[in-house]
Length: 151
Image (cartoon, rainbow, N blue to C red):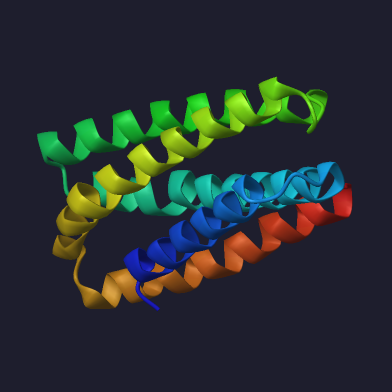
């Protein structure tokens, strides 16, 4: 699977988890969904930062550099919000507010990535995107597995 297709698939999965979280009032279910979102985002940001973004940077254009730098900063903000979530009670109104902010951050990031960065990444060629996709899929599973074991 091409790297960009893998990332799009993961974007849809996280969006689906956010939708499920928004539609439940059950505290235990909200906490579980938050954990699932967190694990997915941790693994997703890892493969982007370790594999995908460095590949995009090899294009050596100013646009690529700007997009990658902004993406790293967006990841940083997402990680800050995620780090606070285990300390917020799912029944607290702050939980919902933080989840809304997190969802909006992720949605903005996904939109820019899919509309701009993925278009630029096509210049890497199908073969390289396929190779990156295979590496990213393997790394994603390893990071998700490690996160699940730590829980």
